[in-house]
Amino acid sequence: MTQAKPKFDEEKILKEERTLLECYSGKKRGFIATLFRFYKGNYKNLIIAAIMFLIKSSPTWIIPLITAGVINIAVQRPDDAVHRFIVYGAITALILLQNIPTHTVYMMYLSRAQRSVEAGLRGAMIRKLQQLSVTFHKEVESGKIQSKVMRDVEAIENFTSQIFTTAITVITNMAISLVIVINKNLTVFAMFLVCIPFAVLLNNIFAKRMRALSHNFRKEMENTASDVLDMEELIPVTRAHALEKCEVKKLTASVTRIAESGYKMDKIFAIFGSANWVMFSIFQMICLFFTGFLAFKGKITIGDISLYQSYFNSLIGQVSSIIGLMPIIAKGAESISSIGEILASHDIEDNTNKLKMKKLDGSYEFKDVYFKYDDKTPVLNGFSLTVKPGETVALVGESGSGKSTVLNLVIGFNKPDSGSFKIDGIDAGDIDMRSYRRFISVVPQNSILFSGTIRENITYGRKHVTDELLNYAVKAARLESVIEKLPDRLDTMVGEHGAKLSGGQRQRISIARAIIRNPRVIIFDEATSALDSVTESEIQKAIENLTENRTTFIVAHRLSTIKNADKIAVVDNGRCVEYGTYDELMAKKGQFYRLKQMQS
Image (cartoon, rainbow, N blue to C red; front, side):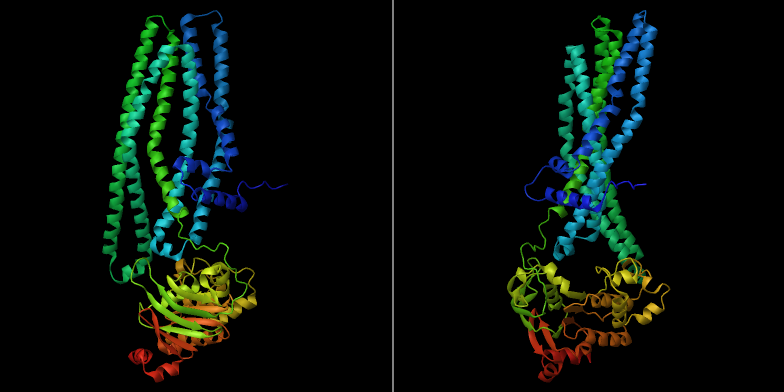
């Protein structure tokens, strides 16, 4: 038995992602034009869905004709009345029963298009988030990003569903209703048209206010999502310092602002909806009295009263549907704008047409480098340093002196504002950083683990890792004794952010992850800061073995841990003020000597 071809596959979603990214590049478009671009590649599914929708909705305009015919038969009493009743009954049963299969097919094709775009949008945002600079991720809270990826995409999916269904309903029902009314009676048709200017006026009165309130509500939701994420991560600190009431008060204030913003939005939507209903109910009654008067004068039949009333109700319903869409359109437009803050961002690392590195020797040259974050005071002020391939260089200095900024330049997260920074003699700005980073490993100060097993965290990003290589990394990182005590050994789940492990265990997993990549350049940013003195001593030996013939950068506050470094660079106020071996700097009795004496 052949297996059914899946409706969605990775290749299709990847194609969808590229299409959606194009929607936010190049010229600016209105949100309706952007929405249509979203569905490029899904037009076939939408057309089939539209055809099925027209067929399934046919009772809406056929039944009023049948109703008018039945009333006229009852009033006029023709000889073939029974035969007509049977025909009308059969037609009614047929058009009602067809709704089951046609509605099912309609939903299948519509859902296929919507879910494809939904997955593509989320995939495009994930792809763009991986391209955006580290600075962008530092400035935008993760809770807000999470809200955009999940909540706003869902809002767009709901919005497109509503607007697609309503658009087809409105266009077909209004067209058919008006054509029938025009053919039946031009006087009644003229009366129908009177309601349109009032509908447009009502929309103009409320539209701007509804958009503004939707924007405020979305911003409050994003801010609160970020606050909730922070609260979750801070729970151990909160409990340890008995700050539960403080956090509750803070989050209560946030959810109160959401409630207030949501209340204002709901109130204006309610007033809008109520005004809309009252206005069209008045028009509905005018239609009833007007057609009743025409029937009284003999201008139309009794059955036509029901016919016109049904079509006028249908027409009013369609206009009302358009107006009722305004709150949904306001929210949908805001969600499209919200995800555009990510997809349209140009704060990306551009590697286009840059040199792809095939190998890395590991030489670095900083020459009079200046760097600052935003428009603040420069962090690096003419930083100069030369590192030879295979050297281990330790960066020391007080907090805020610029050590981590130097590491960010080495990793390629930041670029110098001025000065020269070369890697293997090539200007870093001319290098495809993605190809360069394949040769480096980073062990950060705060170990970063994801929810999964120890094995998955160590082999992250590496395919087909042999047991021999994995065991080597475990042994080199001094993880053996830890793993032996765990119930599932390497397959033990670490919990969210490694919550089930100690700080030292998490850090050793990070080191094993770095080791398994067999890098040419290794960067340790306070890699042993979370370890006890015994474990630190063991890992220090592992680091020394690991750094052999590899260029290594180490940032350390414990100066005793860098005694065996080839060179030590003392960083102060964004400049390298001293450079040499441990013994040379101690003999010099300069700034490094004073730092060492303070720790002693």
